[in-house]
Length: 307
Image 1 (tube, rainbow, N blue to C red):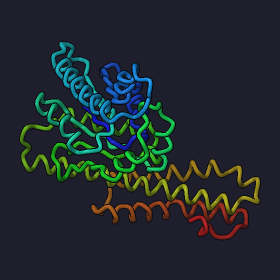
Image 2: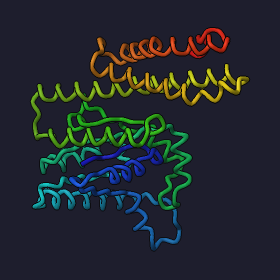
Image 3: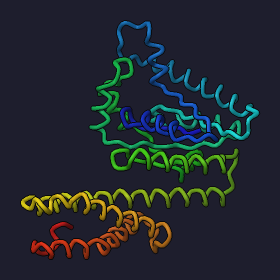
Image 4: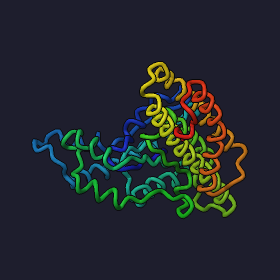
């Protein structure tokens, strides 16, 4: 089971759809969407307005349907096809996620969480474009964002198999690839009723390492964006050079990916701050000679302004 969590408009449904499209022949994907249930309950409602009571009823139906799917999946006789249940809801409280974790624990089913992050302003804009029955009032959005319980695998064992991704900074394809790796790990090591300390610590180290690399990737993506913006400003009067910017962006991203691969295999640091600073230093060392040569070739001086 993969439980999605994030404020309304974060992009959870888009990811759930993409996961279904990426599934191979060895997987059967069941996506349960709270929005779909709310819409079904709203068909006879002429008001088409947000109704907390209807949403509460929808969440109860969602949990019931999830339980039915779990029992159906574990009773299947086709062991060549794996079943993945994707729970598409905000799940903004830890207690909401825990009820699904308890269900998985009861049936020894793998449990994972994908936390979909999003800038509040962007999520608010997307939410306002929704169908009226699924549109969350602005004040409720603010309250959900303020009271959101961020998954914490170190403190809460049932949240061990969890990753956080921002769809505005990471492509949908990359997030789905990470989600599939997360699901495979959860299937291989489902949460038992009691987890010994060594196993818990080992799993926590894996999750922490993955999130540190992810944060370093975000920092490097921002560095690439900043450099390209500065280069565009320096070259705005040079039409021939401006046409080279797409190639420059491609080269910078190649170096970004090379730095990430190096971090995965050879990083002397453990803390997030140290790893991000180390990644930035490697990126600067790899890209500065390239930019210096390009600036010298056209007589624009040092590339330091593009840093």
